[in-house]
Length: 229
Image 1 (cartoon, rainbow, N blue to C red):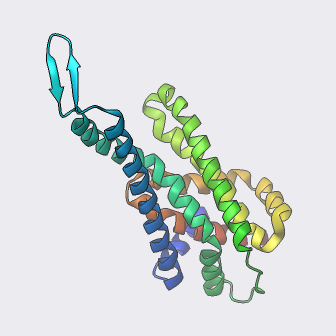
Image 2: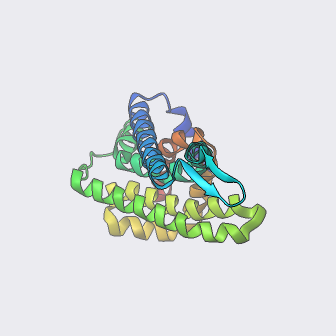
């Protein structure tokens, strides 16, 4: 059933509102990543002298350039972990547009819902972003002990967070915060599995920019399916 929800979301990927949210999320995510990298690069150039003195070797130049190139490789690897919370948080900010597009196409008989206030939506997205960053930063400590199971830990942790937050935001549009939490608690295992399905491709560069939109649509279908049960 979870895969059915995902396939329905995938089938609507050409929707104009899907593409709008996708491009906004991609551009904002890339802009933030470039900005973070630019600041990181400026810090390296500021903190590293152009020439350092090495005992028994003498002065060595170009260290700042070497570190700058090394930082580029470091940021490419780090983007796998950074883009997931960034893209997901930005998409969460526009989640109502995705959910409404899904309902207009697949559930046209539903009554309209009042949109969340801009400030409330902003606070919700920032809280979600902060939670994702904090939990992933803490999970880095676990990666040192996970060995070959690092991807499994990554998927499990982020699958739980993404499922929890996205499902709650989608369900709260129709049921309110408490009703959304109650429904989430009743189907916690299914929601976690759907979150893992979303988190797994988020570890693939470039693909991870597409998944949050599909995830928001998937959880919209999942909410309506579970709410009818």
